[in-house]
Length: 372
Image 1 (cartoon, rainbow, N blue to C red):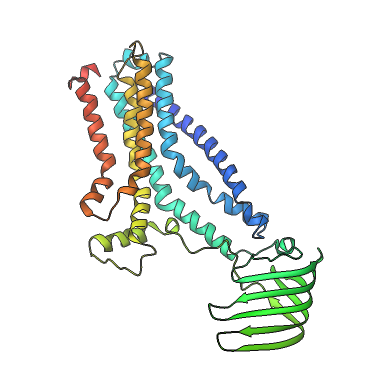
Image 2 (cartoon, helix red, strand yellow; image 1 turned 90 degrees about the vertical axis):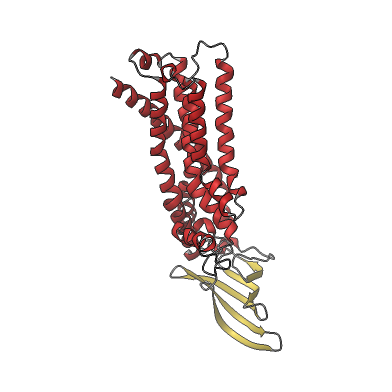
């Protein structure tokens, strides 16, 4: 009977967690997907690129809300058991409150493993894949982005201006400015042109114009009757360098190891400054363990019976305490100051909180487990 009761409790928490997390993830994803529409409307990528890029953001969203949804799930289910007097089934079968608290604590390990898998592996992988996919994709909506008498900056280091343009790709009086480097550039001016798509790549066929190459000291001018300008060599402005959130976890650990243990303060192999790396390591490794303390906080609803006249205030206190620890978990990375002792305290803070809170539960009952 005891196993059946604990199985039902765990399944109720897991089912509620799945329903709540999927709902919240989809809501956030839809809102975020609207913001990603700039990929199509301003940068000219296809809808296929847009959808795949958006879908790859789902693991990141789910990972961010997991700790919050876990606390809400435990709090809601345990409170529901209390309100509906379902919890009395546990007591009548000789199950102590401390046993239920310990069970919820053990159940939280499953969610910690899930969070660690997401933050250490899946999220960096999908974020990097989305960056690479966007980088290697074509600007499929380029013709629709070109507007008459307006400078177009879809590509990095490239500006296009047209005097007139129709939807068949025909252009009259076109100006192209390509920045080669900080000291040189190429300017192309043509009487007419036509945008063509060959093997999923765009090029502009130009007629009756001139090409001007300039650098610090020289100008080179060349006239032409017909030429082609290939746009496939340019990357869109949406592509950025690899962010620290997209780096592999092992690489970040190696950077931290070199900084703290080997005392290499200027490691050229590391992608970012050590403070951004330590913050990212904190988010991936430390935050998941705050799930332990949240499981204890939510299950401590069982300490006071529903008949207690202060139970309503006690329930609000537990709920606010849980939110406080969620906030602490999120801002903890700001206290990492590249001091080994301080950073170790930040690293082991979730475990310290668990020990203190568990001892507090025992202290409240004068260490007499029969009251639990």
